[in-house]
Image (cartoon, each protein chain N blue to C red):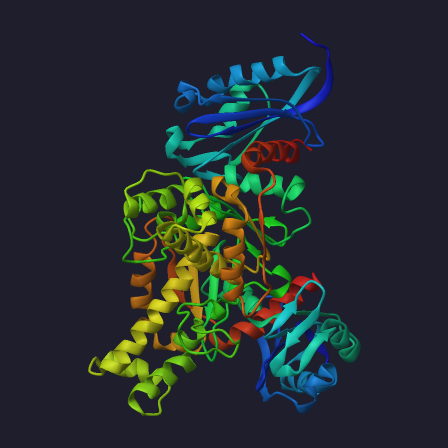
Length: 305
Length: 305
């Protein structure tokens, strides 16, 4: 055991398939990090399941570390204030007093939060939203989620803010997992783009394959599927921006790895819908898949200090 | 002059055609009120223009009143924090330091704000949003505006929150005053409903005439124009609710005087789009055209205490 020379928080981004964890100092520098498959026992006893991950982090650190606080972020319906995970389907939780269990099980005070909301806090501290007061953060991957900050205040609404993936764009469109038809997610998520291209062409692809075909400029099906995704995104994002007044949109998740193939037409389509109001800057996430874990660290430090 | 026995604020809701003014005590009881045509000089010197209105209020009060603070709300782009009216086209103001001018001209400390945002504060204190934390307030009249409160925080975004009247519903629709096509306002405002019915039938009507024809159930044009307005409203309101997490919608303005003719189909249409998330309660404003003036009183008392 190394003598403690650094004070840090332990940050966990707990997803349905992986846990990204890190020890993070007060300047949000990462001292040690590890990504592991989500432990089996997470549904029944999250603290016990995360304990070995914490031990591995401490082991990996080059210096001795004094861990003063824990931050845990998860997907689903999370009430940051009460510390309760109301519903996290991927993790098997319903009305779980997560903050209490983590605090008791790890013997450290804990903050808990929503992965996307926490990701926005991290982008604002270190990434693509530095200096912004009114921001919409939209990770696009298997699904589409969002977090909103207005007047520097991160909106929560008891966990309900940001479910834009289920805004209905085409009432006669494809059936969504939520039971509605034509949700944004069924048209513009990375998985929807791949699925829709496959449905037209019979070829099995990923969204990044479709983006490459769009760049090549020779594939009409790719162009069409992509344009429909951009148009659906522009419809929902522009209404959200006009309603809330946000003037920066940070796009995250796997889909933004396609860069300007996504961002350029999206800027044009949103811009065309913003005759009145501030035209938002639309930029790529800078923290990408580290946003959630760094956000957990921000929550932990905010709660510690 | 009566000896002062009551302490009050002077509240002004300054519109393009009328000023509604009142003396309001700390319990938000109206001690005296008056509505006058908007004074000619308002564009050049709002304090001097409002001074006679204040004097008339004091004169009308049955008891002597000590006025301790002023609240002024106006339409347009208002930065509540800085007290500057950035743009109020109807009043001829651009970058006007309104709070400073009112304070200097009336010799009383003043708070200024946006008429719709202040209206929401009043509905929350006295009206249809009592007890709610996450509220969307939507007055529908000549235009359509909105105010949003999430987590009990009134969103401002430097004055840009709430311009849902200019969310685009039908990109190939009618030209809006803002330069875009198919804004919500061109389909679902009271004036748009009247105009669209007149365009189909050649008959000159008001929106309340159209509502009466819908109630009578025998006029297909009325039914069609009304249904399109409800559908456009449901599209924009549901996306706004899903994005922000608000769970109460308070409809105000002249159009809600049609009551369940508007609210019932709107509840159905919004409900059908909320497969995921909290189904919002949709209710009528209780304060109606007094919301702005009472909101000005709330701002004044908040700023005083």
